[in-house]
Image (tube, rainbow, N blue to C red; front, side, top):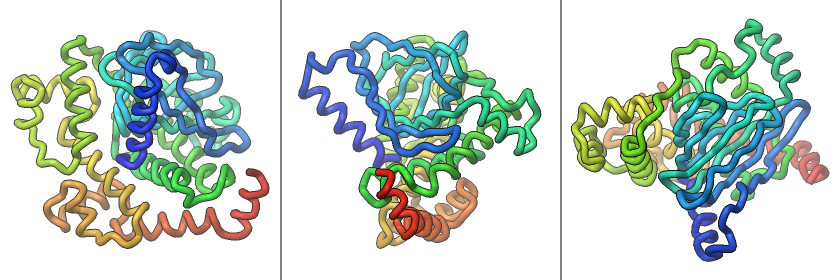
Length: 328
């Protein structure tokens, strides 16, 4: 997700230049696509530790992929630290609050669903009535959702760079539906969506600093010992607190950060050699990279890149391109 993080850093730099005039500015939402019962926005927030958390109400069922940044999320009695690769969930009508106590800025791909439409789709997919609503405020980065998260981020990055046309892209309707149903299944299973621990201020600050370190340098040779040392705590304490707050272990988070970075590089650059992408993403062995990539995304790096190329060609080819241009 490093490509998407670059735009967030530009927005933060612009706010810094504007100074006091930008204080308290609401997150900026850019529509990416919409259809019957769903829509998706690219949301960039530049609020920081000096800004008051903003309070809102979900106007629809919300599922937001955290593409970059770290922020606190409160909905009802649930509190969670949202990290890259995680999903923020919200039910229609629920009040929520987002804050950036420890670090400035975030970028999310925010999917919104009409609850009646979502219920109908969930019923068609065979989900029981009790499994047709979010029952968690957050889903941490998990393997079951990794391919869909990577697909969405790759499409958003391609659209940002002008590789796909407008709001009529053929992929978003599929991603919106598949992501919603897959998330409902994960939440219903309860295996990967446990309510995260509510950390103390000092613990949260250490975890956020470590998350930022990993996200900014996923290719570095991070180990449990080096990360714990950077956080200034013992390895045992670091492992326990990081896992409780982030929902995954440091190794799992680092591995998925590297694989997401590799997936975006493969989607964005047809010419890059796979071995170079592996090395640039922090893997020292091509066979290990291939195995980890296939386990995470269900396809080899070569097949993933070919599939992304075909999807983007389909979005920009006739008649899809003509239809998108007419709607723009």
